[in-house]
Length: 162
Image (cartoon, rainbow, N blue to C red; front, side):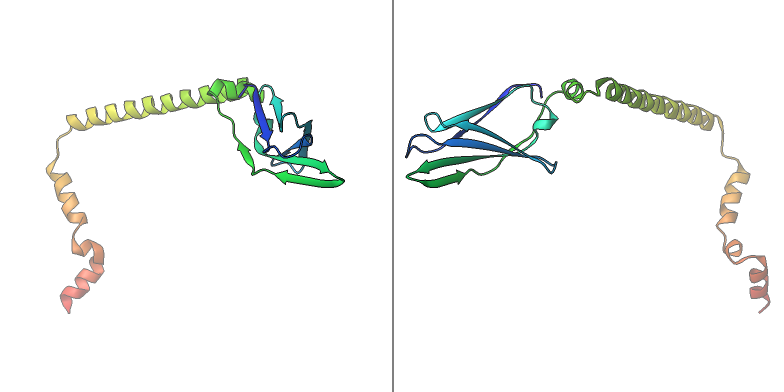
């Protein structure tokens, strides 16, 4: 992001002259074409300050007219992606302040969540260390797990009378 870059097109020498077209396809429906004359069987397409609009697929097409015959040769596609540090990427898209505020807000939210959860766990562990297990609590746990409780009193009583 933000760097100048060059895409060079070249071909093995056979005939002098000709021209190169650089065809740029993006996710947009439109296609851009740049044309330069071939100098020493090559052309250099210069771009400045790379940004997100430069992402896409580039192809070189060489055109030559020899003895009233048109010849052309097309290269394999070159897929251009861009990289850079986070603040460079934000400033290139023109949303630096909005995105930076969003990131700061998310970081603050995460820190608050960690602090609130940490405080809750601290007070819970402190409160549970001060309590001892009572006999009634133990009995209630065993009672809730009894078969009579699952079947209901009536079912248990009816089963006993049969």
